[in-house]
Image (cartoon, rainbow, N blue to C red; front, side):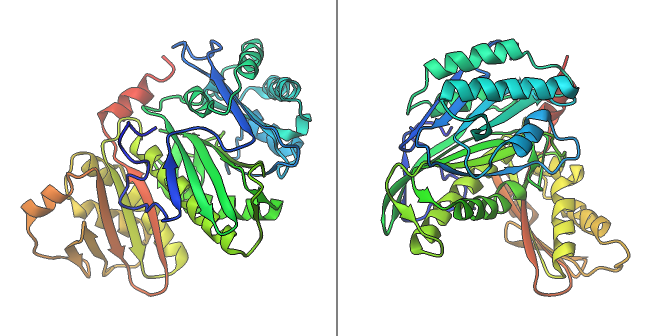
Amino acid sequence: MTPPGVPFFSSRWVECPPHVRELPGGLPAGFRAAGVAAGIKPSGRPDVGLLVSDPPDTVSAARFTRSATQAPPVLLTRERCTLEGLRAVAVNAGNANCATGPEGFETAARMQAVAARLAGVDGGQVAVCSTGVIGVPLDGDAVERGLEQAAGALSADGDEGLTRAIRTTDAFEKQASLEVELPSGTVRLSAQAKGAGMIAPAFSATLLCFVECDAALAPETADLLLGVCVKRSFDRITVDGQLSTNDTAILLCSGASGVHVAPDSQDELRLGEAMDALLRQLALMIARDGEGAERVGRVVVRGGHEAAVEAVARAVADSPLVKTALHGADPNWGRIVQAVGAALPGAAPLPVDVDIEGVAVCRAGVAVPHDHQDLARRVRASEVEYVVTVPGDGAETEVFFSDLGHEYIRINAEYTT
């Protein structure tokens, strides 16, 4: 959550569309949520959340981790839920319920059944999400007590409580509420997200994101919008290049505003622009919160073909040498060249171009004279942009990444001890 007086759209890389207005909080029409402390986190902070869409004709869409070691909550939701008709989400933090065997699947099923009873919906309409430490059995009794407490606290202003309940190593809350002007009427859009570590650019993160909208959409439209927006947001960030077991993004559309968004309409276009900006800013907030991070980098790679620029962008964004240089505000562009060369072996000598914050530092693989003091000043900013050009035409991609410093090591060295 951004501090008071600081706009949600705070990054220079994400523009707030002109038809979007930030709201102080609250959920769109038809939604209720709550977050409570159930004793799963040792800190005693909120760790169980419940999100409910009351209208029976709610439409939904979902995306999940690509990991081969998916956690039971992900497996259960994918296997037992009608993903275009979800009406509730039961979530816990502090324990990922992953690598927990059949018992973990049974615990996830218990979460689903309890949430369905409390929300008054079918079990197949409840998605289950968990995040936290891997390989530790999840206390089903604690989760059930938490869901019962959360059901009693459900409110249209419960988005902040839900956001608090899904945090793990997050340093700050990540949520937003927006008002969106469409040609057919005004709708509301909100989202709550978590993520700070185990994040890589393939929608593979210790990442949860719940998006609510009170527009009425067809299931195919909801699925298209979520898929496109995830590809341009959570697919484009990395903290440490580590593929998570639990990441999930869910879009729920209650239709309670009475505004119908038809496929291939101006309504769909404008709603998509709003959702795209919302998720991209949330993704950047996750990168900025990269477990001790102080800066966010954006690497843009142009030239070659799609596979080549993607490989280069990921190599630069995940390079510990590049990331530590970013942390120390050191414009050490040689590390970028090294990462590019590692991503495209056998192409030597590679005539790569590199620009940092608009300053040319390398052309055709050779150093370019520049003002070192001016560049050092530029990279002390909270956001730093790198542009890499490789031979060829027609392809371009981007990846946002956090720096890597001492605090990341401390947090992950002590995570289970």
